[in-house]
Length: 56
Image 1: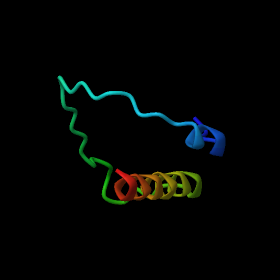
Image 2 (image 1 turned 180 degrees about the horizontal axis):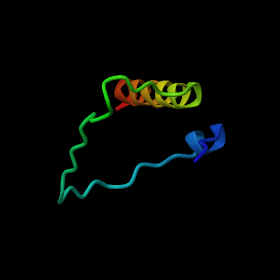
Image 3 (image 1 turned 45 degrees about the horizontal axis):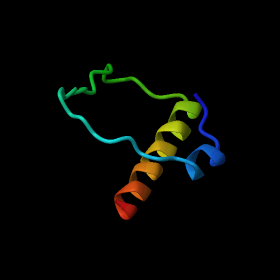
Image 4 (image 1 turned 135 degrees about the horizontal axis):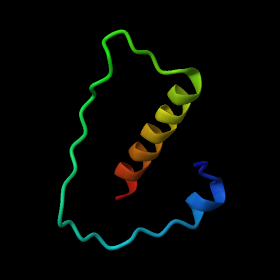
């Protein structure tokens, strides 16, 4: 899934209805390394989360 600038500019958050919580663990093998594309996508996601933390 690709995120485009237009999608981010027009984003409206949906009301939260938390009825369940999901927990994920990092259970990758000890010697696992993400490929370059995955690293870029992960870093972009972290940047978006940081921006959201500033504005919300």
